[in-house]
Length: 260
Ligand code: COA
Image 1 (cartoon, rainbow, N blue to C red):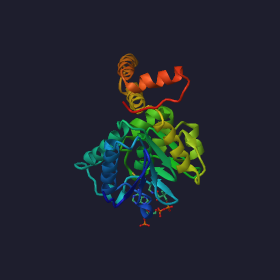
Image 2: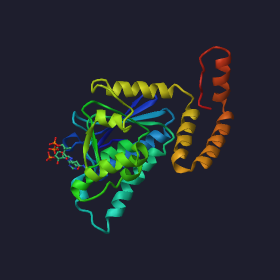
Image 3: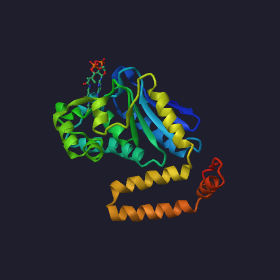
Image 4: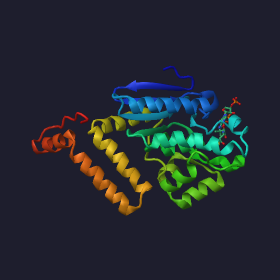
């Protein structure tokens, strides 16, 4: 499929999605969001793809937010659906059964920060900047920021960022737990590829089961979450890869996972 606003590259078992509107700092307009959704669905259905990296084209931005020209046209009748549209795509991303890594190469503001928050892990270049500056535009985050930022960094940090509209650098983002690690801008994609390749070398069913079980920590209370973990653990005990992984350990040889 040909895309206008993103680039999708298949690199072995890893798909690299590049948001590609660099002249508009990769702002998330309706076309880009729709194409991102299609690309994620392609990755979800691809037997080859086992992990995804999302980054931004150009030297300045991951994504500088929802497209403000399109945002400006919203009103009390259309606003909720505008938010639901972005929310639904980011939630689809969050619930993918393959890990998604954000390689944040520059500005991740508003919807761009919310896209990074929906990813399963975030790695940043030193020049990356994060923020939810919606209050400067007279609105609030609408693509999941009030929920995911609060879950990730806690209520106090989330309150400060959302209420002040402050923009923080990658060191501060690392300090508050918004990003996993900071890599030099030259090595960011290679380092994310290394992490993705490490993950795809593991048993694929165990990776998707881990994603599902960790999500239960947020979606369910602790007791229900424990039960969910036990059920997922039980299912995984029925897989060929579980037998192979444990037998390989006992036989002191590398495991050969088949994804079954
Ligand atoms: N929506 C639409 N266009 C955007 C955009 C957005 N969120 N962010 C940047 N752009 C466009 C600019 O309008 C400009 O387009 P132009 O060259 O046609 O005028 C281009 O991208 C470059 O941006 P510019 O502002 O000139 O770059 P800068 O380096 O001076 O500033 C930012 C960078 C990120 C500080 C600034 O672009 C900004 O504040 N963007 C909006 C961030 C925001 O509020 N996001 C939340 C939206 S809900």
